[in-house]
Amino acid sequence: MPRSKPSKPEASAISCTAPCTPPPCAARSCPMRTIERAAVLLVAGVLAACGGGSTPVPAQAAPPPADLHDGDLHIHATAVNTLALPEKVTRTYGIPRGEQTWMLLVTTRQGEEGRDVAVPAKVSATARDLQGRKIEIPMRELRTGDGLLDNVGTFSITPPDTLQFTVQVTPVGAQTRTLTFTREVAK
Image 1 (cartoon, rainbow, N blue to C red):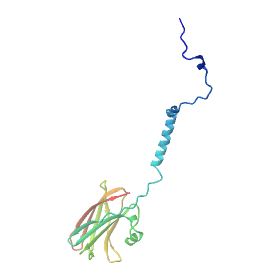
Image 2 (tube, rainbow, N blue to C red; image 1 turned 180 degrees about the horizontal axis):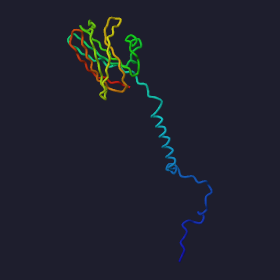
Image 3 (cartoon, one colour; image 1 turned 90 degrees about the vertical axis):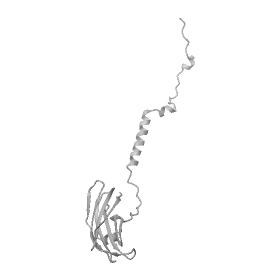
Image 4 (cartoon, rainbow, N blue to C red; image 1 turned 45 degrees about the horizontal axis):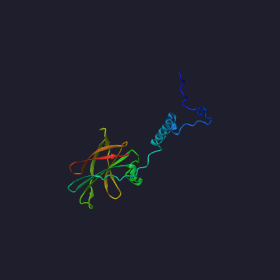
């Protein structure tokens, strides 16, 4: 039986002494390189996600007050974080400043806009958060140096939340009016 011919000539059987380098695509398919790259990307992503604090959010304008007009009687109510108030105002009103301390201010005026006068009134107020918890807001009468009469109360809330306020105002010698409004408590 005849022998088969060798597939390569004898000269090609000489071995090469040059260092063996893998083809360029072999490095890309190496599982260890892929794992290292994934680990680096994962660590970078985690570090970016829990970075050193959030970017400061610019102050937002306070929402307009809730209003109730009944003839020439005007009732305005507004809720604001006490940190948004100048220190002079919080001192004048005798209220504490704090990240979780909010102020409810209720004004009762009678007469034509611009010529209205402060009207003494008994004010009671509550708020409900998104979970239905009731927050009693103790209100007190406050007379300022310029002759105005307001009702002010403070309460604590942990943001973010949404509050539904119910304010009952009974001006001296008049019937009780109820004002309801909602405010977002942003973080």
